[in-house]
Image (cartoon, rainbow over all chains, first blue to last red; front, side, top):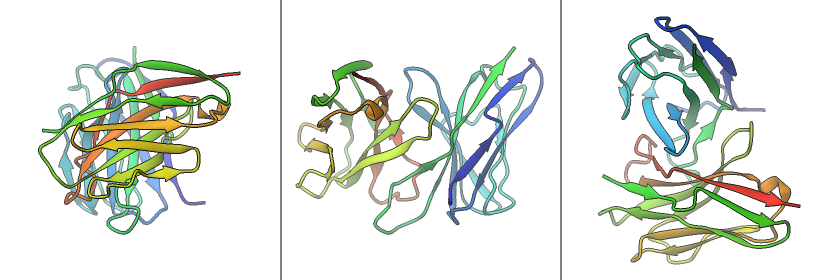
Length: 115
Length: 117
């Protein structure tokens, strides 16, 4: 079955460490996204990518970095510059156009806790 | 900038009853999409229902229907015959029509719905 796989599901990090969250999709979608979810705040966009080797900052990109070397993969690095990284991170993908415009497909999420 | 408001942080409903979740939004756009997404506990977020603003007819998907009031900028979700599997966080979301790539999704803060046996 096609879908989006995020790993790890749970991650603990010490302050000052960078960590990378994996996101892989086999839906052949062009666009991929990283969202941060905090209680009571909905989802906020960190980065998005519409095509391989290209990505754009979202609303809260500071302290994060991404790469898009392959269509299937969009890893997110949470750097030590991110001041409050403890959160739930969601990866999503989207296929342009068609009757399913606007339908984001989500992974199961990664919960990052900074100790 | 667009904003989406969900004024009910938590709701509960008895199994088999009907419940309505509220959503209001603010935009100066005329063409846009509205969505309800469902996030069950420890499971993936999925699309429940979508409404295109230029369509006057309210969208319906099985037990889920919306009441779209464009002038009032209101987009409520009605769940009929509630089932235990409907227990989840529900997010209302907005997307401008011409920006169909998705980078301008705006999500509300969510409503946590509990269906009680």
